[in-house]
Image 1 (tube, rainbow, N blue to C red):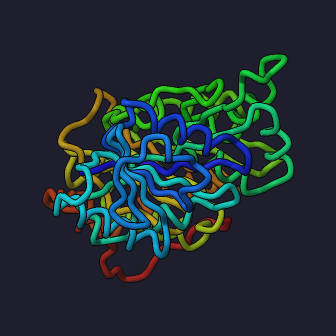
Image 2 (image 1 turned 30 degrees about the horizontal axis):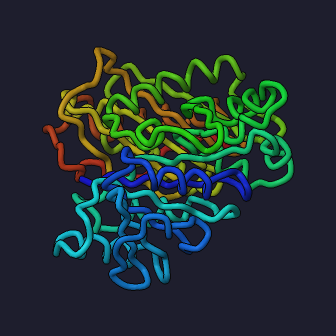
Amino acid sequence: MIPIWVLTGFLGSGKTTLLGRLLKSPGFARTAVIINEFGEVGLDHDLVETSDESFVTLQTGCLCCAVRDDLVLTLEALLRRRASGTVPPFERVVIETSGLADPAPILHALMTQPAFEGRLALAGVVTTVDALTGAQALARYPEAVKQVAMADRLLLTKTDLLQAPATSLIARLSALNAAAVLSTAAFGEIAADQLFGSEALPVALERWLRTSPAAQARQGGHNHASDITALALVRAAPVRAVALTLLLEVLAEHVGGDLIRLKGLINIAESPERPAVIHGVQHVFHPPAWLERWPSQDRRSRLVLIGRNLRQAWVEALWTALDAEVDEVSGAVPAAADTTGEGLRPEPRPGRASFPAR
């Protein structure tokens, strides 16, 4: 499975400088980079081969690809060329977005494309933030806020130009997305593996879920300036697959437009030895990934939501109501184990309990 990273960040936040330096680094070898245009990144220094106007191979082992049409078609072309041996056998993909882009449509495409199943997997989102102007961008532009809120990793750039530590900006970033790992870069220098490392999914998810509840407690779970809320929900008892499916359906229907990110590690009653990893962006949820084993002794179900105007009490009450309804309709005995993901689909039911008003 080839991991895909999305590199985003507001205008002038240093994405181009970062990419230019990474492409010269041996630690970035075997990476396919998808960018809007080649000209801004400056690839001439080690250009060795041009397959056509859209594919450039570098001495470091990187492959650069320009997005000319649809992103999905570009990725499919990359995979075909990799299989045929006409491009280097890349082991990682990085997609750079424009400074004003909403990363959500890219994540939707990666999460819902059946052709990528078993070949490509979304690893995470890296967002660059300008240490000098980041606070002003967050105050003025909702795009900048969303880019930060969606991030798995945040990179504070241009720290070499600071006269004093960016204490207030770091506090703002933590309030928006305390679960993201924060790194800094001076002169655009940072090790490739620090941003796009092959950290195992269970370890990364455990850290994300572990950080979010603690950060939520410190921040009070809400940032009034941007209406961005971070919620952490925990269930000690195993969760029925149907109840989880219904929960995701209701969230997509009622808060999908405001749900920036959702991640969870769930103890499914029908398969208690193999936890399900769920991931969602707005109204789109990726099919669950089943881990071979629990990454730690903690087998509680944990769900983290980041979005606008989310209310912890409402989501808690919703989940409780769905659990009660499924228990009443299905009975107390879990169904046979199902690790295919098919069990995370709703089944016909004789009516639905009334859910709490949002």
